[in-house]
Image 1 (cartoon, rainbow, N blue to C red):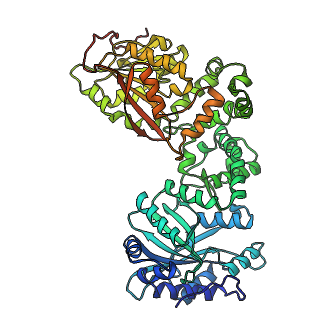
Image 2: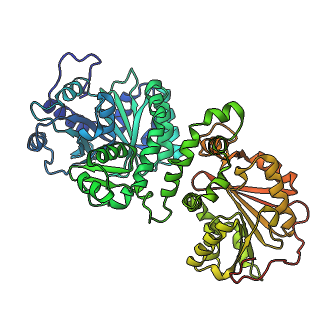
Amino acid sequence: MVTTIPSEPTTIPGDAARLTSAVDFVREQDTATLLPLLLPGLDGPELRALVERCRFSHAALLLFPADPQELRTRLADCGLDPAVQPQPSVVVRERLAARHRRDAAELDVHILRPPVLGLDGVQRTVEIFTLTVPPGSPLTPIAEQERRWQHEAHLAFDIEQPDPLVLRGLCAILARHGARPDGGGYNRHEDGTVLYFTAPADSKAGYRRVELYLHGDHRDVLASHLAEFRATQPAETLLRLLTGAWATQALAVFAELRVPDALDTRTATGAEALAREVGADPESLARLLRYLTMLGAVTADHDGFRLTELGALLRADSAGSMRPLALMYGGPFYRSFAHLAHTVRTGETAFDHLFGENHFDHFARDPELAPLFDQSMAASSRMFEPLTTHPVVTAASAAPAPGTVVDVAGGNGELLARLLTAHPRLNGVLLERPHVVEAARRSLAAAGCGERCEYLVGDFADVPAGGDLYLLSRVLHDWDDDRCREILRHLARAMPAHADLLIVERVLPADDSPSLAVPWDLHMMCNVGGRERRTDHYARLLAEAGLTLVDRSPLPLDASVLHARKAGDETAEVPRQLPLPGGREA
């Protein structure tokens, strides 16, 4: 039996009839017979490829019971387990909110999946979305429209071993046969990624939508899928883009008021109690949190608000806290970005235009902004995690004599501390400005590495000679090409022939691939006067300074590490000219 959903429905089946039809469909269909109905014209190899990687898992529908007891009765009447426990449905709630221009917090959508045994002996489910609509509810118009058009009715296939290449191949087959992206999302409650498609116009399966369900978090594939979907909705996409500044400010205020520190990831807190704790107006705070729910920083239910894994990154005391970044991007950098037009018109840095000085000097003179800026640099330190196992780091650690790592403009020493902690035989030297050196001294001492470090106050011209490994992390993107060549020449003069140089930067892609380096390039232009660069650009700068790019490796947060050495003889040794470690400042 095939349930046909007409394009212009003249009769609207009730919830009971639709549920019965869906149960019968799931019981009677299997993967191999359903796919040719869904995608007419599939050839043999394509059908085999899909059958090997897809498994028909369920048919879905949206019901509108008046109360929980009505839902349980409907389930029992269809031979389904009425005791199946519902879970929050993030994706469908957001789709309903967008479709009906309603606040998502008003739509308490749940999902349950009672099992159905197929005629082929395979266990499947009916996926039931529910939105309780009592008689006289203001949500009644939503229920009437959704019953008429059945937007959420769909067929679903679980993807076996959902690696990115397989997923792209499956999506390509669907596209060739007329299926088109129709939204999707990640459900953190189930740790599952959903990709929706509209079924081809000539589909004979009786459902207008198809779902691919991927176990786990597949944000990259989801982002590509949603980009294709939004390309068909230019007005809605533009509105979302235009409100990006609102998201920045909402997250910055969330962090500034220390709301994440007052929330828990397991126990919900009501808006009234939360407002008392953080010193905010209850109604205004609740409206802010409603927006942050849409952004994924918190979740909401009848008991209040809970912090998500994303929102927890804004706690002041969390490991790798990104709170300083939120305060910087929502504070001074937010103000200067309002003058981006000045930069585009004149080529001058908007930050300098607004504040009358460059950001380094401005932050250094401000007793509040100086530590915040250093903390914001450390907030992205998770990009450093793979560097502890980089071959040149492990080689320096395994050398017969203890190796020395020179961190040039190393900030508060976060990267140097990671390397010295992972490799107790290494010693360190950190070169920085005076006020930053003191912060680095405290940071490295807290990490237990202080006794193996030297602290040098100076500029790039003061790079010490004789190190085994030199670090230049997120420095070159602050400067134009002339200054970069000058910095690299200082390093080349100081480096012995055997030394290695690791440069950490966000590298622009050679093509139009999405990358955080692209918006960061705009940030550098507007606020710093620097730029992000492609790999070949860095290779040229290195060569002009007497250095050779050896390789490039990816790092978290869309960063890369570039490995360089001195051009020419790479085997000669030179005497060391570094002081012995002992925590002294030179």
